[in-house]
Length: 267
Image 1 (cartoon, rainbow, N blue to C red):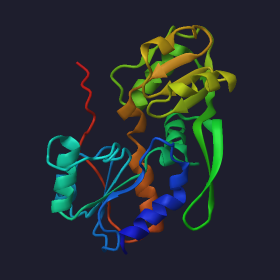
Image 2 (image 1 turned 180 degrees about the vertical axis):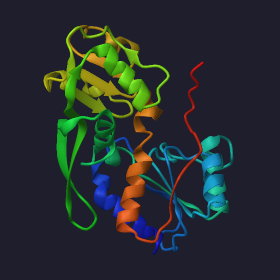
Image 3 (image 1 turned 120 degrees about the vertical axis):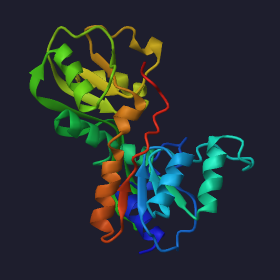
Image 4 (image 1 turned 60 degrees about the horizontal axis):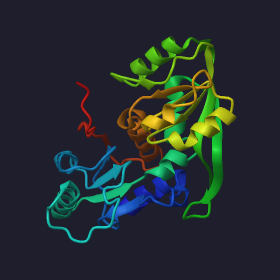
């Protein structure tokens, strides 16, 4: 099977038109008519991840975050992105990224977060749209997902549950809600732009990866904000990649990266 066939399988699930206007999802580099020897699945592409791909016999890396997010004026090994690009070229490894298109897809990143929390009947909230894949098939997309817990729980227990299920050392939260939490809205990564929509959707809590300081103000006892970290909120994206490849590309080796690329330390 060729690399292009693996990419098409991923894009049927999360069409590139679902990505946000600022994004650069899709093929980052490499020859797609090459036979795929294996796909290494990761959140970020670093030199260490490229080395891991080579060591595991994978000539394709599928990442969540794009390796080339901003235009490169030159490739001279001057920073981590340039060095990763150079290493991948030397080792004949193709790189593709499924970023906000995978965030926004039905069954994508936000639905996986909802699943890990245990939300029932998850649906989109905020802006929704329908996008066409390369083959003409249509996929529903949306910015966030909202659903309900099987049993309402106190805010402190909800925070403890998040710490356990996402292996989070610290959850940033506003004032703990005095009513029990039942309806929960989620948006992986930097999702603060959806906070107002979460309130409108009747959510008791909003779980996301990162927010700015001033965005916490003014929501005391309105909604429970729970920020679990950008990396932590998206850490299960590789599971989605693996499921798609194993289902749609039988025989293709799909390897979950063991390299931790979270640049943030919790001391």
